[in-house]
Length: 274
Image 1 (cartoon, one colour):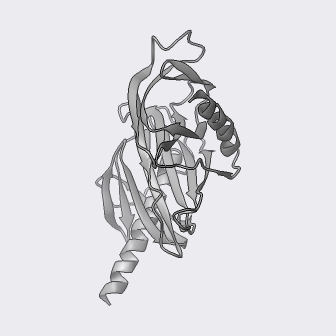
Image 2 (cartoon, rainbow, N blue to C red; image 1 turned 90 degrees about the vertical axis):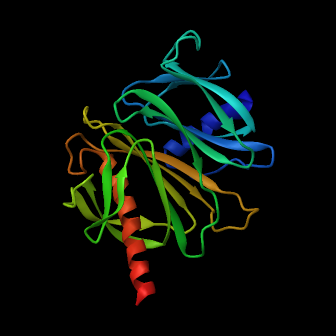
C-alpha cells in the first residue's frame, strides 16, 4: 500500500503546481484517494494504518490520487514531526473506501473553528456532450450563505461540511452570492467558466474570523469519455488576501460558482416553460 501512497505524493506535488496528470485507474478492486490539507498555518504529518504517509504536509497542499485496494484505512493527523500517531490532532478516523470509487479526504476546520476531517465522494459519472460539472464544498470556518439567481435564492443555507453539485452547459455564466437570509449581493455578479467534460471541485477553507479564507481547486476531466476512458485530475490553490473584495477571501468566490450554476438552471427552466 505504501508504494502506491508514495507515488501519490509525487503526483500531488505536480498537481499542486497545476500540471495535468492522469488519475489512477479505479477498478473493481481499487479506489482513488486524494488528500487535501485545509487547516490554516499548521503543517501536519498524516499516518495511515499507523504508518507515516505524508510528512510535513503543508496547508493548501493536495496529494493524490493514491491508488489503494478497497477496504478500511485508519487515518490519524498529528503535529509535524510527531514521533508517532499516538497523539493526533485529528482522528484517528476510519475511512471506508469502496472499489471503483474516487474520494477526497479533507482535513479542515468546522464552522466553529475546530479541526475535523470529511471524506467526500467525487462524482465521476459521465456528463452530457457540451456540459461540465461544478461541485462546491464548504470546508471553512465560516457562516452559511445563500446562492442567488436573478436576485432570488436558489440554494439556501449552504453550511460546512456540505457540498452542492450541478451539471451545466459549457460556457460562461453570471453569478452573485449573499449571506444567509439576505438578498443583497455581497459580491458579483461575476463571470465563471464551465468546462466541457470536467468536474471542477472548489473547496472553501480557512477561517473567516482569522481572515485567512482561501480557495483550493481540484479538477477531474474526461467525464464525457467512454466508460473505459481514463480521467485526469489537477489540484491547486488560489489564495486571497485578508480583507480583499472577494468577500473576505476565496469562500465567496467558490460560492459564486454555485450561483452561476443556479442562474443557468433558472434560464433552462424559463426556456422549458416558454
